[in-house]
Length: 234
Image (cartoon, rainbow, N blue to C red):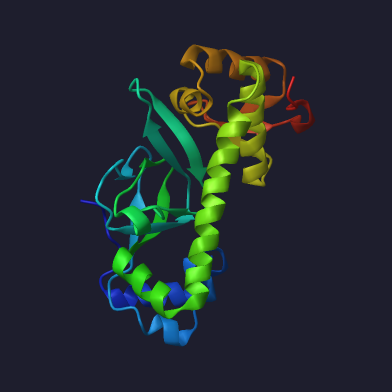
């Protein structure tokens, strides 16, 4: 079972009112009358790295708003290979497609320690029907999620193996905001960029030897970026 930190629906709605990233998530535009429509649990959940939030084609229980950590969305290709189609960051929403289909169209897996909210579909449908503000926000989130997924794949699947790795390191550096880059496991990176694990390892090692990045942990997943200006595509 997934660990649930909240104990009641009303604890959940209270958290929504006071959420530290409320301006980034679905409930940003709700007023007090909108909150009074919520009559189902909105759970605070925590996941550890490698734990799945849900599986591809699972019947949906709700949508997820990410408060802390990173989550990868994975799909299987026709030949059985895994492809990472997007990485979610705090403020992103996972599972919006379930509002239309009732099922998830990808697997969602925690890449780090993750904290998020699970909002039941019935809550979203009810609020969407009664709050034009939320309905508009849902449509904006959905459109933005589709665009980000397309942009992610386009950027990371263009050019040589070196170009793809450089692009990925630069993206993660820009996301971090603290001068570092979290590169995950080499298998995950390969799945994102459609490269073999050995190829990814070789290119990351070359960046390290060149002094562009410096490892900050023994696992080789967290790096300080010393020369971001050198992470241009070549």
